Amino acid sequence: MALVEVQVPDIGDFDEVTVIELMVKVGDTVKAEQSLITVESDKASMEIPSSTAGVVKEMRVALGDKVKQGSIVLVVEAAGAAAPAAAPAAAVAASAPAPAAAPVAAAPAASGPVQVFVPDIGDFKDVAVIEVMVKPGDTIKVEQSLITVESDKASMEIPSSAAGVLKELKVKVGDTVNIGDLLAVLEGTAVAVAPAAAVAAAPVAVASAPAAAQTPVAAAAAAVAAPAHAPGGNTVGLPHASPSVRKFARELGVPLDEVKGSGLKGRITADDVQAFTKAVMSGAAQTKAQAAKAPAGGGGSELGLIPWPKVDFAKFGPIERKEMSRIKKISGANLLRNAVMIPAVTNHDDADITDLEAFRVSTNKENEKSGVKVTMLAFLIKACVAALKKFPEFNSSLDGDALIYKQYYHIGFAADTPNGLVVPVIKDADKKGVLQISQEMGELAKKARDGKLGPADMSGATFTISSLGGIGGKYFTPIINAPEVAILGVCKSTMEPVWDGKAFQPRLMLPLSLTWDHRVIDGAAAARFNAFLGQILSDFRRVLL
Ligand code: CAO
Image (cartoon, rainbow, N blue to C red; front, side, top):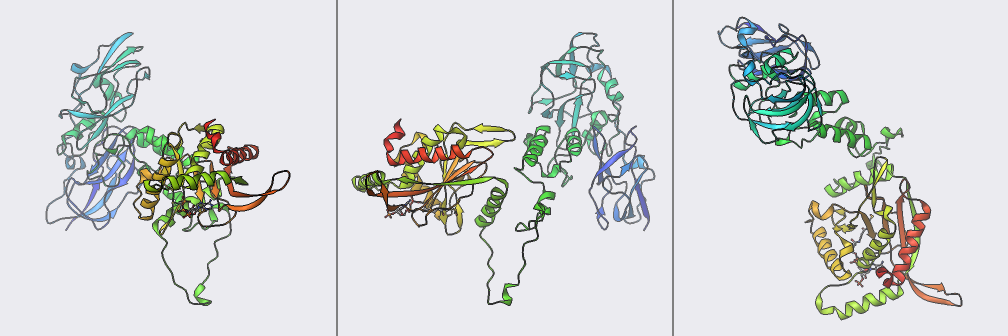
């Protein structure tokens, strides 16, 4: 069996392209025309196919290598007696046809409106517009990509044949286009170039697509760019994004395979790359590489701390190892981040709930038959909404250097379940009465205990209350549920002697512990928040004020 060196075929007149993906490895059996690697320039990416069938014996390129026509990609032990294709150019079949000329050309113009049409993008029809890269008002350069189109096997960017200000865009995402379709109208400021000439002028636009004969759309890539990055294609592992987006991601150092695409068919857009970067920079997300640096269980090395003590507990007595529940693992990671990242302070205070508790007990007696039990927590939720309205920064979230003030009041409450702590959310608590809140809380707490809470039940909270009142304790320091900026901890109320100026009176006192983010809230505001909350709880009529 013959060893055959598979070379990079004629990929057009650009010098060196970067290997961005290896699609096979030593030991793999490859078919003739099977894609081996993906290469990419500034605007185009393409797959390099094998000129012969056989078993891969040696890889001669690595990720990041620069290759050009004639570079050896790998060595294959050719299958059977079949002779390998003699020359790389032959191996990749026909080169793409030269882009067609004038018919689709825009009329050259020194100024005034210039129409831009879809150039000759090969012999395929009705390709879908999957990305629009410009908007009216943008200043467009000749050769600037306007839209990305995609068939089931290839995607490519369609460049502008003229320069000018974009007046009108004639297509939108989801449309299908063909050669000659009107794409855009520019207010021309420069001489328009016929598309064919424009395409030829683009350094990366003249690549003869490999395997053009097998994939008609690849021929189109010869005209303007990138083949085959459709999901479900043979480009397993390669993110679904246009070459310019991939270039953008590379420039920022963004691992594209970790970015979630919001475009058609999950395509990653430049906005997605930007949003990912923002999330990582703000600490809201981590790249896999960052996560890998943090040892499991939070070893502390990422904070420059000494490692977590590793003790062989069995040396000291019998032990049993049990995996933590999924909820505990998830909430643990969140709690750790919130405890470490938020400069949190806790203010403790007491609220006199003597009258409120009497009212609650009598209401429950009156409502005995309704089946809805009014809880102290429901009153607390209502009282907190009033305090949040008075002190809006407690209902805000940090967004970089700005604060997002939420004009809705969704209150989370910590619920203890056999599997761990969860936080269901009472939505629009400001619009609900105490009875309705009590009823919803009962339903959500049951769902929580039964492990049936869905993501919608637990999202969107603007402030959280953690009540240990039914259990006991005096005060504690709850951890803020980021991106919220404050949380109220509540403990068990007890009858205490309170001095009224003349004598000690027995009053039912509720311990409150308010933890707040010092980046957003000051101590004075926190003290005022607690004092206001105390006033409301001692005389609930104030909620109406
Ligand atoms: N002071 C005194 N008694 C209180 C009280 C308080 N602050 N809050 C509740 N109680 C009483 C109730 O009146 C009830 O008494 P009765 O049965 O005699 O009527 C009893 O305690 C049980 O209340 P509950 O806990 O069932 O109801 P709730 O509305 O107070 O709380 C829920 C519901 C879901 C918050 C609670 O079941 C729970 O899970 N609490 C734990 C939350 C938690 O773990 N927080 C810590 C998070 S940090 O790790």
